[in-house]
Figure (cartoon, protein in one colour):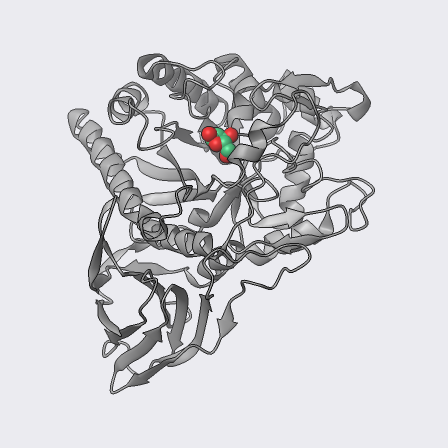
Length: 498
Ligand code: AHR
């Protein structure tokens, strides 16, 4: 058995955990909207066609913010197509995903869904095929109570009160050559600055996310962030990061070490933000919005076979296995370890499309990745503590990876401490210790864990309970020291309190 130790000091915080790091994402893509959150006539659908079974699972995930409506989709979207009487809404060829968009679901339906799912919107504007004008009109439609054509239009659509959307994305992945209206960093920085300025003229209380790189590996990474921020530092509040990982060559140890690369990605973006801050002699810091992250690769081959111009196809429907759940836990731990700068994050996506929740016409079920997300979202609120990890390491393609990946979160309000830990060792269990003498009287209130002998095990509609967390892990506090045994390939939530 390997040995590892954690060291924390309750007076050494990383930062307050912003609950918005437990956000997610709904794009008009595949069956995320149609047959996902919206399916009129489905047995659980309400009078608006919103599926109650999905809403219940979203509430269980505890998602404080949901990004909408894209993604690549937003770069060709006319938001006006999705508001007003449904019979008058146009059908469009949707170029990003090569499907037909009916526009039967749009902005106001999404806002109603947010209220029912107890979440807040994070709205993206189209800076691909459109620009400053459409963006400012959308802010007026959403956030202005009276006066002006677009706020009156909203009222005429039955929404007397403004939606008051606080968080806005200035486009999506504008660095990507696949993006409609793809731009150079200079071009994007300028339009982000101009759109952002005008949007804040309409509503000064909004917060803006500028597009960073669509992955660490895109060749423009680094210069993109530097140039974009140099142009729109005044208007932007956050810079985005996007990253997906996969295991197509079945190298699980390397796959689980992907968080080493993710950690470097976050640190590098922070450095660039702070370098631009220094160059500008600014007092303001730009925070990070990791607004697309997940595992994505299982569905790639299948998606190549899709016919163009169909509606709500099974697209990006990754079936997640146990090792994916371990990586999702590791990615969330990595973000918590940067809680001082990562203030928003969105698991991409929420329903059916690379998602923790899947639906059929008759039911909804939880994929393996649902569980680490739900557990960390529930217990990871409070202050993330600097967590020194003493652990044996292994070599991976991403660099040396500690077998133990961990972070501790102290919740002063309810006087609890939660240890999140992944044992990435595929063969060996691990004996973990943590000195708790600063937390006098704390005992293990709950030890929930996930493990499975088969890293490829999945949950399906027919067999949805293959990979689930269980309570009753092997841990105890003795003389102020926490002792826990972490099985090979396992994820743990050790919740301590008086
Ligand atoms: O989440 C799926 C897609 O991944 C999004 O539309 C895009 O932003 C990213 O490339």
